[in-house]
Image (cartoon, rainbow, N blue to C red; front, side, top):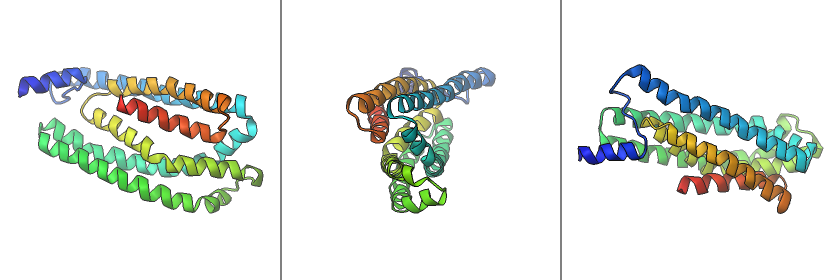
Length: 219
């Protein structure tokens, strides 16, 4: 059993952070996370460039008007996802496989609960929320559409985030980095396809994000 578990760890680049030289383990774990942060920003740059060049400044402004509201809810749920994976790291470090599996299931259940109820409530209140932050009337239709689609698809993005956090909790930050790099370029290609070729407008941004995350998560 021990030999099998070690082979599984090597296969998925999982690291036991409780053994070996701490400084080397921490550096090798942290470097992929730093690079991942850069690719998150790079994806945002790609999205902004594609939207601005193809859809124009008005649609870009409409999406920008929703950022504070969508970030509020996605950040809140993302914090819950990150917090629940702390128990996964705890039981992985103590080699308690049974408790670790229970923690993974609990994290998935909590994520599902929050990504269903909070986005649903926010979608119902989307018009008042956009009015509260003084969204210009001419931007309201596009902003409302983008916000509703973003919140409605949050179940896919947050479950994808849960997978990455779970891998990080088991010491594997490299797999998450590879996933993020692939997602950055795949998502950008889908952005161009849905906006330029299929003319989906601001909805194409959300469709591209969901499809790229679902496909790569399955792979």
